[in-house]
Image (tube, rainbow over all chains, first blue to last red; front, side, top):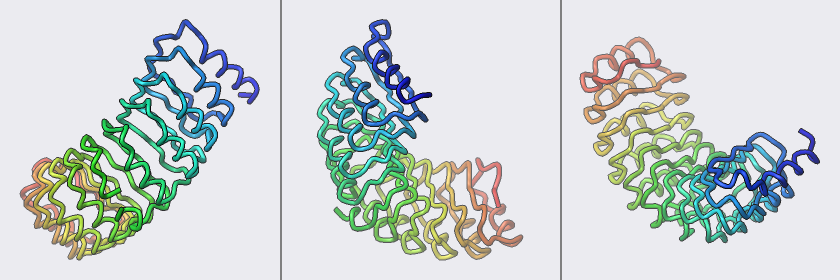
Amino acid sequence: MRIGGLLEILWYLSRNPVWKSIQTLDLSHNQIDGKGAEYLSSSTIWNNLQVLNLIDNNVGDIGTKYLSSNLIWANLQALDLSWNSIDDKGVEYLISNKIFINLHTLDLSWNKIGDNEAEYLSNNQIWTKLQTFNLAGHKISEKELNI
Amino acid sequence: MSRNQIWTNLQTLDLSNNEIGERGAEFLSSNPVWINLQALNFAGNEIGDNGAEYLRRNKHFADLKTLDLSWNEISAKGAEYLSCNNSWTNLQALNLSRNSIDDKGAEYLSSNKIWTKLQKLDLSHNKIGDKGVEDLSSNKIWTNLPIILK
């Protein structure tokens, strides 16, 4: 898929009033970058979104910032951002989110998350319903785990 | 993370392929609020025999059904520690593949009397010979275990 084409699709997708009740959106294994994530996050109609899979894209820290600033996905239950080149900065954006109060699955495996940010994630007070947490493939060490 | 008090509903924790080490295994297994944990993945973390000993002492994860300890440099001693665990009565799948468990380790494992619900035991890519397989197959507790993967 062409990048330009993809961005255009995301733009129309997030504004398509016909899919108002969409619950699951899987856009894994594409080339969604910060800009694409910005378009997706700008949706004001997907109040019912429960599952968002963005596995193996290029969302990065900037894209995570936009996703985290979304204000209407209060029903989001599962967010998969594995394999997305998300760094410590992206985690800081993510934990600032106050909307995803129903999140029960969070997959951040195979990004670039360090000890401090792993600690911040586990101290988050919003995700009280979390049932599945995946932080595989980082360099989480005993230093973090003793906090 | 091991002092997390918020995730009282946590059922699955995947920390595979990190650098947890034996002390990390100790800290994590001492968390008192993850009482609903059903699946724990520590694969590829160099927890070693001592890490297995710390895990064995765990009393909180009574609902644990799946435990992945593959690629962790666990030998006969670690297998002995694990088989002495008396909390994980609901354990259904134990992955110990890619470690260095030998016949002695298999003998220790086969003495386990707790894991009555075990359905899958993966011991592939270890150092188990005919004697170890014989001991494993003599276990009378694992009545739900259809196949032992050598």
